Length: 496
Ligand SMILES: Cc1cc2nc3c(=O)[nH]c(=O)nc-3n(C[C@H](O)[C@H](O)[C@H](O)COP(=O)(O)OP(=O)(O)OC[C@H]3O[C@@H](n4cnc5c(N)ncnc54)[C@H](O)[C@@H]3O)c2cc1C
Image 1 (cartoon, rainbow, N blue to C red):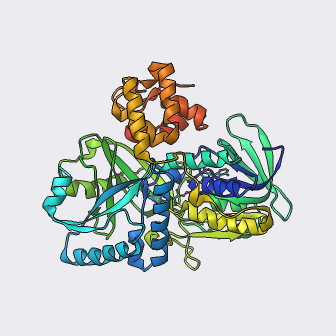
Image 2 (spheres, protein in one colour; image 1 turned 45 degrees about the vertical axis):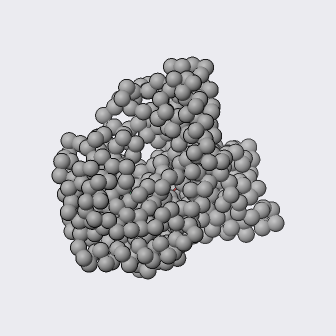
Image 3 (cartoon, helix red, strand yellow; image 1 turned 90 degrees about the vertical axis):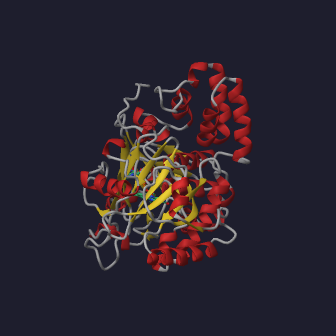
């Protein structure tokens, strides 16, 4: 990285930075990306993992935003059908008023989704919810509609890998500690956080895609955001993971929060378990280590227990907390109710050579990247590069997921692996399920679980390091394999 001057240096290896690296590299720009910890170690590995049409934004009349979310959901279903999968959602409507409100909203949603819908909504009774979701103890019906779910950290890694395939140079555990240039930003001073080595990465345009850290990185430029006025107002959201069997459902359920604050809590199936969230509270603490506080846990648990009476605190086996990079409203720099703040993204240009992108959603990362790289291309010289191509670049799987699954099942049977292992390998590695199976074929022990009782296979640890730039055990077990979001009590083996 220190040997070249790149067209674009991206700071931040979350979904936003990875998406920008892919967009810019696939247009023909030379691209470097540096990430201070690990890919998706920030918000992009701590979300609700939904690729959603943004039905909630209809309440605020944000029709344009809903349209964008629906369009991007459809694009992602096509580009990464192994990683982005439809999930039915049961939206509970506890009163006639709520039923009427949701009914109108979902009708509008389906209308906006024409041509890009996963499935239309319909009314359900409480009994139908109980039939679909054993253990549901509520008395209200509601509506069934569809969203998509993903593994946010794996989606981020796959986008980063695809950027690399187009020539982008990526480094994790590489922190930007200063910006180069005098007046005009000309790249960044970077420290390898594992070795301590310092290097300078030069670029024509530097992109600050550091999520909730964006104000800090902008301030390094001594310009624009150095006026001290924060552009961001982070908001914390937590999720709890429930033990296998505590809540049995293959559909997601949206229940009203017990606090009576008008919010909803989502329960989402995740392999053999369910996670639930989230909270939404203004946050001013340590950006690197947001934690799940007792009050956060109680908020989510109360909503869950109200509708699933058998569930208690003892069923919680893991949790995570993430920070939303919400844009502070221009006039109200002081804390405001974070749900009112815009979920849109914004691009700030300046000082010369530095572009900052903030806000947005996992769902809309591709559109955000397109918007940003259009501006970067105009700055570098439009003649240099092609048009945005990311609507047609597959993210790790060419062809249909069903075809890949059928082939993988046959191969897995040949190696005496369970069908669930085949599905797991396709859903996590796309086309590279073949590589995983070949590795198991050569060394059968790689087909065994890393920890008895959990579905993570030993081959995944190998792939995390050889295929996905995992450097530390935390990279492997927290983000690549998601072992700790399944069960926080497991001690992972030292894989050096
Ligand atoms: C609780 C919660 C639930 C959510 N659920 C959903 C959902 O279901 N669907 C959806 O679409 N969206 C959801 N979102 C929003 C979505 O997750 C975020 O908008 C998105 O992940 C932000 O990505 P990012 O790349 O901008 O930020 P991040 O993922 O935080 O990436 C920024 C990166 O910059 C790195 N960095 C910081 N400083 C430096 C530096 N000096 N040098 C180098 N690197 C640096 C950080 O380490 C980090 O990895 C949710 C958010 C939260 C908090």
